[in-house]
Length: 212
Image (cartoon, rainbow, N blue to C red; front, side, top):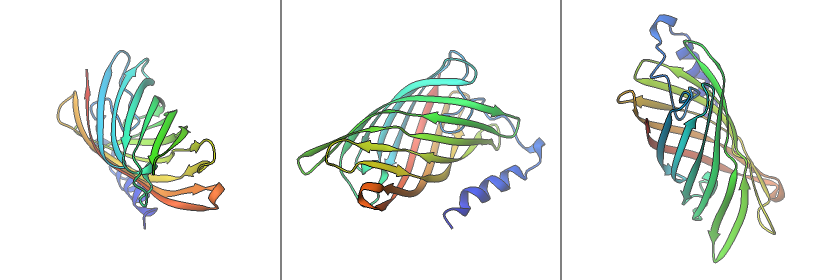
């Protein structure tokens, strides 16, 4: 059932007549529409697994570059673990293609991570990549569906590499041309080869973004 929801949502939206869709506000934080050359946006998200603050800048019409800081109370989205931790990440988004009805992008957000558990500190490196599809439903509403692979690896005698495979969707509602509120959901298994097992991982985040 979990696998069907994003696919059904995408199929329903693409089935709408082309005249029913608008280009949205021409930008997004969660979907595939970049900010545009010279534009900058601040964003914040909170929920599971934590709090994230970010800044993103449009270096061209198809490329955004920025950074993110996260304080998590759930270890990389694992629903069974509540270790506190922090991440410092770069943020790159590249728009692959855009039409009036849909747009496609890749994101890459590398950076170090630190989790604190029972007096120990687990140190690692996040190398997450994602493919996202943006679908403007109206001038005020943008839908996204995506496949995220937030790969990360812990150094030393710890967990080792982790390979999450998350799917889901999200919504951005534009209060005006500069301000948007959002909800984003991704879920799926996080494969842990060194443990020969997996954890169920989820990201469920409410957010706000302001472009200027």
